[in-house]
Image 1: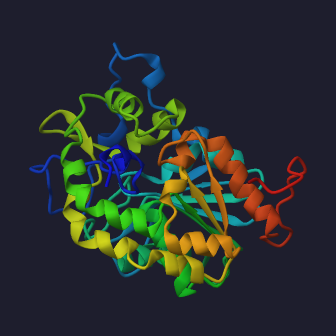
Image 2: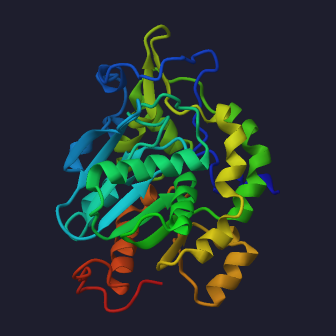
Image 3: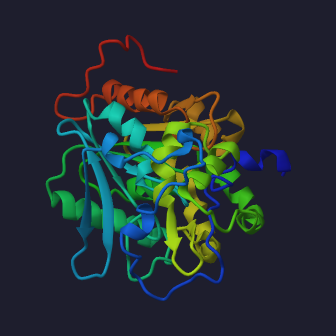
Length: 350
């Protein structure tokens, strides 16, 4: 594979966020919340890289306790009516990856974004169990805790690793009220081909940052995110503070989950095509489309949109366009009891 294309691969540098190898802990619980975001800002850092608050984008955050387990998942919500846009982030990201888009969508839909296990402020008894089965069960458990057996219409939106979780859930037909599936920049062929490069990419990531501002600056100048505002709200939730080293390290420890990577993507294209709901695939480039999906797209089995001038994190880089595509998908498929009316959209976005 051309090394020049590595930055466009699913689970690539945007998601290759690592911890210091000697900074592991057997405890399932994270440090107190203050360990994440209450450290003073570095005065010399430009104001443009200062962190922003989640409350500027979401209406509420809460911890969802899963019965008969030690798992507690952190969830952000926005909006009070319309179908549920349930967002599943990629590896190394957090629920705040969808923050700006949530602000744009919440007048038309309810947006729910959870921190997956081993990410953000979610805590489980085994944060390193990132098997596709476990990740799917986590989402189902959160949906059950939030809505019981009477969930409104749900659209699953998954980015990269989260896209594989969304596809597996849709293919399993285990969410009774599921009415739509949106996958963001992940396809089986490209993802599987990238796995042999992953450990090298992970090892090349910075091991620590002296401040949150420095981490935000790196995420933007390093090319993993192209939207400064989104980086300012989302990057902080991907970090944790190391008291002993007096620095920030990445929350996700993806290099220790290699045994699960293949399971995320193997058979993904066929599962996506077989999912019995309307489907939208958002891609940052046409080179990501593999043979099965090319044939399926030609047969009209799903809608595909190539989003120009963006990196892997489409939902962050062009949040407004992403929000519009999601709302248009809901509108054109009449999802929810009354659908979503978008008068300004006279034809589907292509």
